[in-house]
Image 1: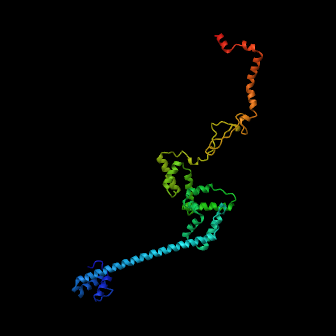
Image 2: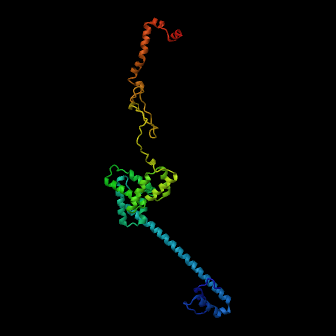
Image 3: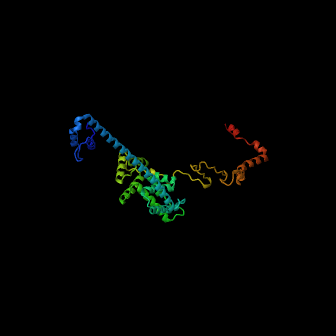
Length: 344
């Protein structure tokens, strides 16, 4: 009978049957008053049903209030989201108006970012909107580069960076600084000690060969190991593989090797032929004269062609001329075969 009954339910039932009770009383005291009242003694079933109906009505009202509150919260969130979208569009148009257009030349990117920062300060753009506005301004391709670029790519780009044509040294220094700061931000470097450790770890990692560097890359995951931890992992790997610390391998540094001149033969420049590499394997072959090794003409037009044939045919011509003048000598001259037979 009194299951799930609250003070509010008991007060409502007592008020309906004409009993007086104070709101300061406890639930147990209100229950005792209800059990001792005259109406309950007359008809217990009626009072029990009436109390159950009161509890059911109270639960129904609470459920309706909860649904109303949920709908109100959802409507407020929808309104806030629409307002946020509208405010983002307004900020985007305002920043786009106050900043210069997206540059097509590399040397004007610094001016573009300076104008973006001034526009952000002038319009008091919140931090949560700055990245979205910047990505929408610079376009999809540049946004993909900023989102998916790796820290290793940033480090390699920093090492290979060169001053561009028409770029001042101040612009070059600013570009280097921006790239290095972005690399440190991705690596979560915030103080001088962590910067020193990062440089040392990168240097140790560069001296490793491909086998152990792949192992270290798996071990460190997305983060980077401190110099002591990195050195410890390398020593453990060497001991586990049975490798000696006397060996020094720099397979990763073998991209640009010095040319080796052992067991090579000198070839004169006129006789040298270009090597077929991946760049020129489909290129057309250069024809040259096989008599004088010149690329300006072919052998049929070579000026040395007649001299060559004259030198080759000169002895045979002299023999034919002598045989015509003295035919008897050629007849009486014994052959090599007859001489061999006579000696035998």
